Amino acid sequence: MLDFKEIRKDPATFEQKLKTKIPETSLSPLLELDEKLRSLKTEVEKLKSQKNAASKEIGYKKQKKEDATQLLQEMSSLNEQISCLDPKIHELEESFLKKLCMLPNLPMEEIPFGLDPKENVCIKMVGEKPSFSFPFRNHVELNEKLHLFDFPRGAKVSGSGWPLYKGIGARIEWA
Image 1 (tube, one colour):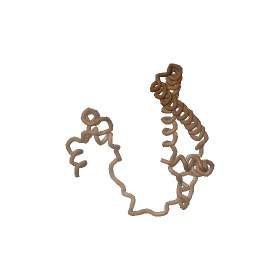
Image 2 (cartoon, helix red, strand yellow; image 1 turned 30 degrees about the vertical axis):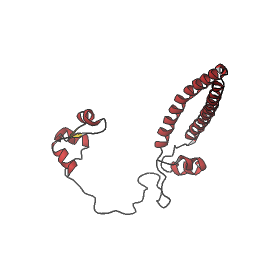
Image 3 (spheres, helix red, strand yellow; image 1 turned 90 degrees about the vertical axis):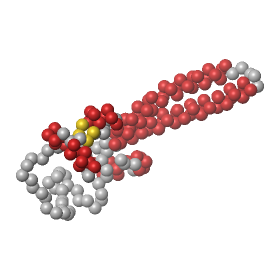
Image 4 (cartoon, one colour; image 1 turned 30 degrees about the horizontal axis):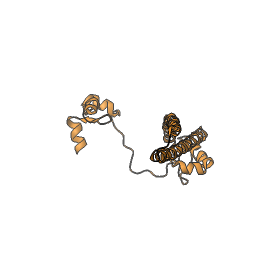
């Protein structure tokens, strides 16, 4: 994932480099989201600072046996404001990270640029490209034929994303 601090420093250069991979790339929505997120976080930090100051003042007044009801009301108001802003911040952070994760890595300067795959230059090939007399199959098709793993049972045992290897699938995994 790209470092957004670096993007923030020079967004035009990043956008230009990213457009070599994905021509319709635009960093402006991401930058706008970042700005909203930063302003909301600043606002919440100010509110928390006010809340802490009010809390200290309440403690000081209670110690001197003075009335602190106004400060308690102010503190509950601050708590409400903070609790309203926290979900917004969480939602914006989630959206921001999703968009940031969708950006590809920057292309290296020394790699030649081609507009489409036909224009790409092959710099080096290692070995010969193998040819097979059978059609390729993906892991789902192979599992249907050979019963190598079981995702639903694996999810029951250890949580989602972990297959349960069976038979030769287990032997291959442990080889």
